[in-house]
Image 1 (cartoon, helix red, strand yellow):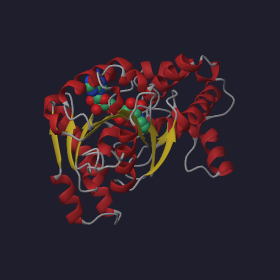
Image 2 (cartoon, protein in one colour):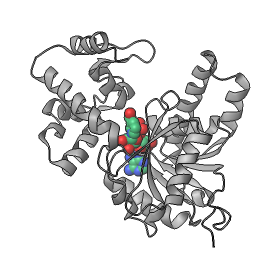
Image 3 (cartoon, helix red, strand yellow):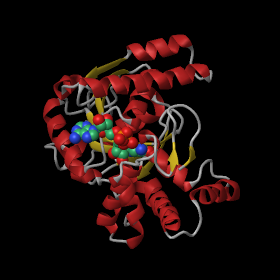
Length: 305
Ligand code: NAI
């Protein structure tokens, strides 16, 4: 029999029911772009309070979309209607695609994949992780059917940045990777690049050593935070410098990515410098915490520390 979508019922079935796990910076952004693309979205958060905070985060972003003229009032209303929240992973049983976007901790993510594998019974459903650095195979091996596990790595802020890195493992089926790619490209309007399943994938493998080098420069007194950022913005025409970008990503997330990449490659340049460790220990996690290399008043522009 020919290897066509008709011969494999459902292989080309359009994804219209998505689950997002976590409504932090990334989960909220992924849920928002799905809802704006007319997809039914169910978002998991650990508690009702975190779910309410996640919902408020998405509504604020939709409001910004209206005030900047990117979406209409009606589109904002419709997107808000398509978003539902739950604190019970069991509610994900009918999802055709689940994107996991919780904290960058292998133990937390593998436990979620182990549970999801039992809950989402449709063998054609795609189980994706937005991890920045944890090899996707490790998450796939927590499941009984690793052929449906892929990496879908979005960029922050998700409504603004058009890239998705699609990461397939030795076990991912081509149907699953094609469905995930078609969803990102045709439904969400993103551009997709493919990466091998190596910690950091393409973008973070290049970005993270650069961010860590900038943190080491601050640590050694080589130059100030403001001057390093100014040099890169004015000298290389980057939209922001490495320390402002570190604050945007989240210093806890950068530390976790660096740890995973160091574990994978054992290269000293991936090892998190002590200043980064101390800032994470002090909960100076960057923009999301209101304080990192810069301070972030609840409203207004970042200011020097
Ligand atoms: P965040 O700190 O804003 O959100 C973390 C989320 O994890 C929250 O929803 C929180 O409730 C949830 N969480 C924490 N502990 C949990 C647990 N034990 N069980 C279940 N949920 C738990 O972090 P962010 O920035 O949204 O990052 C999430 C993922 O996205 C990470 O894997 C990160 O590497 C990846 N990522 C981050 C980017 C960034 O620029 N921040 C860019 C691309 C990917």
